[in-house]
Length: 312
Ligand SMILES: NC(=O)c1ccc[n+]([C@@H]2O[C@H](COP(=O)([O-])OP(=O)(O)OC[C@H]3O[C@@H](n4cnc5c(N)ncnc54)[C@H](OP(=O)(O)O)[C@@H]3O)[C@@H](O)[C@H]2O)c1
Image (cartoon, rainbow, N blue to C red; front, side):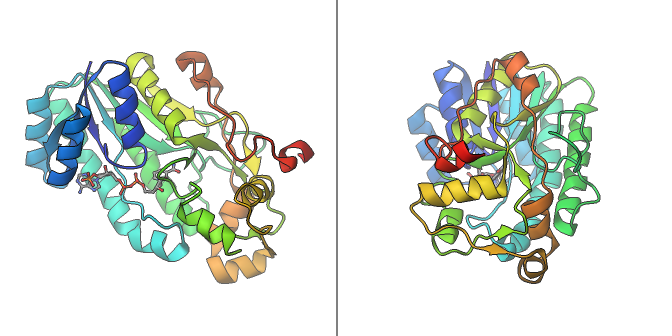
C-alpha cells in the first residue's frame, strides 16, 4: 500500500518506517526538515516537506502523495520527562494534536484516503477494578494535567471514529520504552533513576502498561493492513505496579533502589499528577489486539530475569 506517515521521524515514527518498508509498503513521510528529508530518502522513503500547522501545504502534500492509508503519530513531547518540561511542552503538544491532527485528517479526507490510524494513550483509563479495555472511557476526572489531556484525547478519538467515508483506527499505546524513549538506558528517566530522583509514591500501586517501541511499530503495521475500524490497546502482557517495575528498572540499570516518598510529599514536590501516576494509574488489557492483529508483544525488557518479577 501507499502509506503517508505524519510524525515519521519521532520515537515511534522511526521504527514504524522500518517495519513499513520491511513489509513492502511505499512510504511517504511528513517532515519540516530538509536534513531529515535527506535521511528519509536514503532509507527509501519519499519525504513530504511541510509544517503541519500549514493546512494548505499539508493538504497539497497528501493529495500529491495519493496514499491509501495515513498514519498520524504527531506529538511535541520533550526529550526529558519532568514536571517542568512536560508542563512547558503542554501547550504545543495540545496544539499539534488538535490543530495539526485536524489538518492531516482534513487533508486525508480531501485526498480520498481509505484508512486513517492515529496515536492515542492506553494508560488513562478511568480508575476501577481490573484492567481497562477498549470500552473503558478515559479518566476525565483525574488529576489536572491527566484530566485535561484525557478530555483532548477523548475528543480526538471521537473526531476520527466519527469521520465519514474513512476507516478510523485509534491505537492506544502503553508507555513507550526502547531506543529513543525516556526509558531507554540512555534516556531521561534512566538518568533520574540513577540519581534517585524518580521515587515510588505512597504504596506504589499505580499500574503501568508498557510497550516496546518496535512492538508498537509492528502492531501499527498490522492494524494498517488488517485492523478493524475502532480502538486497539497496544500494550504488553504484564501491567505492573510502580513498585514492581521501578524497583526492577533500577536493578536493571545497576542504579540504587528507588526512594519511597509519601503521598503528601509527592503532592508537594510533583503535584497531583505525580500522585495519580504513582498510585492510581490503571493498566490495560491487550486481548483485542492479540486476537485481531495476532499481536505478540515481548516481555518488558527489565523484568526478564528480574528477582522483583519472581517476587510479584
Ligand atoms: N505512549 C508514550 O509513552 C509516548 C507517546 C509519545 C511520545 N512519547 C515520548 O516522548 C518523547 C518524544 O517523542 P517523539 O520522539 O515522538 O517526539 P519528537 O522527536 O518531537 O517527534 C515528533 C514528531 O512529530 C513531528 N512534528 C512535530 N511538530 C511538527 C510540525 N509542526 N510539523 C510537522 N511535523 C511535526 C516531527 O517531525 P519533524 O521534526 O521531522 O518535522 C516528529 O516526526 C520520547 O521519549 C517518547 O518515548 C511517549
